[in-house]
Image (cartoon, rainbow, N blue to C red; front, side, top):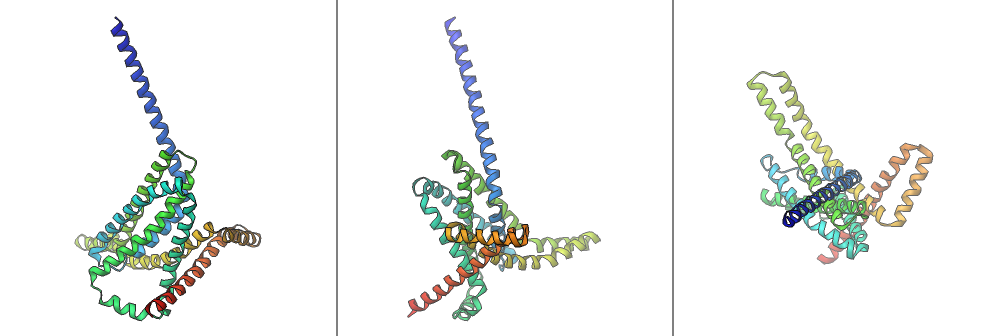
Length: 313
């Protein structure tokens, strides 16, 4: 009799514990979903820049190598985030003061890359660099493209991780880790899925055009021609947008990391708002970040040129 009673009590306690566990898991998942949504909204701007930059970085390779290159960069991006997520958690616990300096260095590097693209033809070693590039075989060219894209992705991923970390700063360490993992995975799949689609637009257009010839279909023919015409223009736009994004993101990192610049941006925005209203309030920070990015990039490029000449001597 007592055995039966204890068995029933044990069963009830086990059932209660299971229900409590399920309730805790549901609450945890709900909290993670809510925090992930907030973090996604805050990192949406960087996500757009990440898309433009990476689409630009993988252009120029042979058509049959476009998807393998995107996949190689995506694997590199996953590796970046596998390094950045635990590093961010460790730094936030032990060295929180280090996050801002690291971001500033990354911001300066983005400004440098953007300025190097814009001012390349004015640099003293530009012609020599072009000659060297012409000697590279396609395999080496592809490797350089992948390395450049992964390097840029590392900086943008670091910013996304830090913004996310700031969003969930008040949560428990386990919740922070889970949200960071969710954002890292979703962002990477989203960005490189879109990049893969963008670089294969011309192939999709060619496929539709060929299909319209096999079976007469005016809609497929028009759509195919439209995609073939739009693909190069889209890639040109993304190349331009990617360079602009380097200045905007890099300048924005500097503004948010250096108090003097942040206060100056607020003053400029306040003045623009008083003159142009809501339009000034929206445009002023973007223009400020962009001009700051160009100026910072030019300074770093000049320092790099001077250092290179001294080092060569």
